Amino acid sequence: MINRTLSIKPTTEGVTFDRDISEILAPLESLRDCTCCPRDCHADRGSAQLGYCRSGMGFSIGSICAHRGEEPVITGKHGICNIFFTHCNMQCVYCQNWQISHNRQVVVEHKMELSEVVSRIEAILDAGSRSVGFVSPSHFIPQVRVIMSALRARGRKPVYVFNTSSYDKKATIESFDGEFDVYLPDLKYMDDRLAEAHSDTPGYSAVACAAIKEMFRQKGSSIWLDDDGLITSGLIIRHLVMPGQVENSKAVLRWIAHELSPSVHVSLMAQYRPTPRVAKSQKLGRYITPQEYDEVLEEFHHLGFYRGWVQELDAPENYTPDFVFDHPFER
Ligand code: SF4
Image (cartoon, rainbow, N blue to C red; front, side):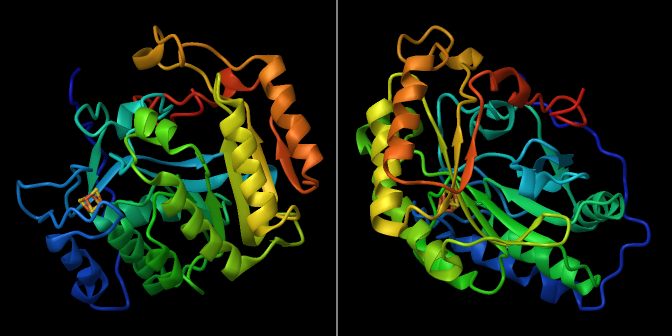
């Protein structure tokens, strides 16, 4: 596997902030003793001794693009400006973003200055996007704070979306109260054996459920939309149905219905498709079947969910990104 750092066009001209830049960058200092996520590595990310996620103190980006593949209330006409960070604090063997997320095999990585990140985001906002989404940000929380602070210092007020696989500290989510407009967590597992086997995340269900409970405490069940039907505040919980794991999916839905509410907005996803890494796996090397999806849908309706989105079963091909391209989803 080639580790390739693509060159990027310098886009620093004209980016100035109405605050001292060292003040804006201050949150990065916490990465010298990193307890950013539940792994609590205490790594010095400013040194060569990196932690589990093998991420440093800078802005390591897979892509910044206007993404039109999210739920309709997020996508709208112009898409959401999504920031895809590289590496991850989970290591899902089936990850669709494997080119940027596998810690020891990152294929595409753009190391950007803050000014480059900001100017790319602003170009997308200027083209019509109203929201900024941080995708798999759990190991880059200080960088997320810096980017938000920089955009604020530039007078920008987009809708901020926290798009996470939910291996997050509850305390982190508590600290976001009033900062993030929209929470978009993926609740992947209630079965911790699966979480450990497929994502190397021990204790995932307790960690993720505590984080999502806190999101629910802040946002409740309702979502708020603007005049164009775009979300401005709220919580949407995603769940990806995986081959052979119907019981896990049902348990996830039961937890949401019983511990939160059946009036929560749920986005049920059928887009699982085997990546090259699991293509030959007996368990993960296939799509989900119509029977499996029907069984999960039956539970979804049985539990009384009535708000949200249910993906069509023919979705897989439409959602597979290729980060080698400038726009991973449109090529
Ligand atoms: S963010 Fe990375 S280095 Fe920090 S605690 Fe989590 S896995 Fe470890």
